[in-house]
Image 1: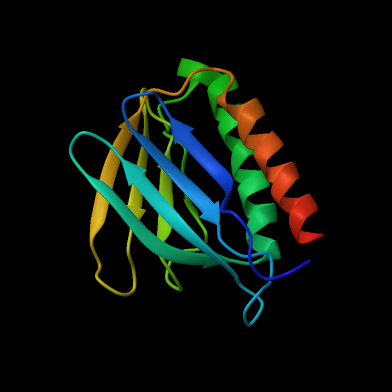
Image 2: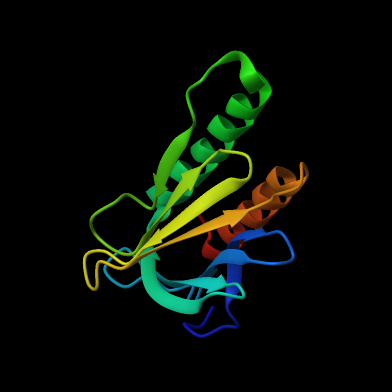
Length: 144
């Protein structure tokens, strides 16, 4: 496989009005990290920021999806709101996923500009199934 390809969506959080996506840009890791970008689209802001993730981060995304499903299943039984960062905060731009109603995704361009954008997204129930399918596809393309 060559190092160039069409961008491949790993994460797509989209309600038709606004969205946050993470796109794999290359199947070839650089220093164990895959080159990617976070893309925000809304009537208020349209932005793209470079990021990177490794194979362990794919496992973390799978675990985050499981935790969101469990949190959604608990419903109003708890006052705690599920929140998680992906990829791990501190080394590159990352998402903070907040399982509120509607869901909220914060995009943090840390450590470079330190700008953050908060995007509420009214995700439909079937978004988790689509997220898992994209994860399987990306893992297959990367061979991990």
